[in-house]
Image 1 (cartoon, rainbow, N blue to C red):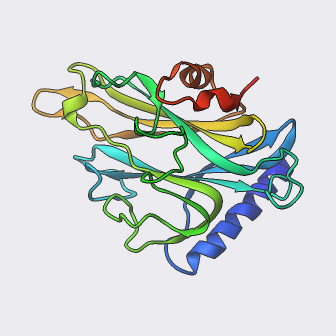
Image 2 (tube, rainbow, N blue to C red):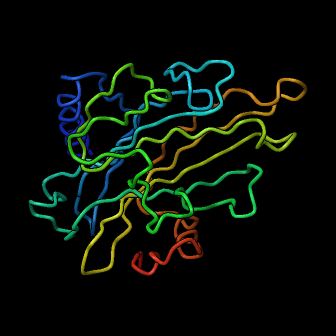
Length: 253
């Protein structure tokens, strides 16, 4: 455990050193270990959350009338998990794959639990345009309306995503809280072999039902929890989804 904490500190400080030269530092909320067959590959870092109103007025401080949250999620590989070092998992690249579970009023083509990408995607990964993401040393997304920083900071990680979900009152069910949960997992992608699902983190938010003219409260962030492996719901969602055929190349056995 001490070794893991020291490793987390070194990687996070590297990310901070590279980013602080330009703008806002990465504010770390949670770090989760990522391993393959008992060997550490790196860490999955969840930033401190922020709040916004329909992807406007972003702030690290919760406020009335906010409808959503924001978070940046970074995977930082170590030497063992690096693509050009030992690469014990023989990954050609690392990707981030995320599912969403909610109790919102959904359209006919949506499911209570589904892969968190647009339906026209050919692959299930979140790190894919037009969703906000980055690789290596990169500038954060150029849309600053739903980000809590005044200018684009630089970040340094193997792969990163920037997510700013929200739910307006229109999608809530009267008498029930609005609850949206996410599970974000690291995938070792291989060009000539099956891919491997690695460890994950779960996070989300809830808006309590207040009734009357108030509707629902501002979101309460549900902090990240580390998962040693994808949950049953994660695997089942990939297995049953009909959006794309990529599931046949995932190997979670």
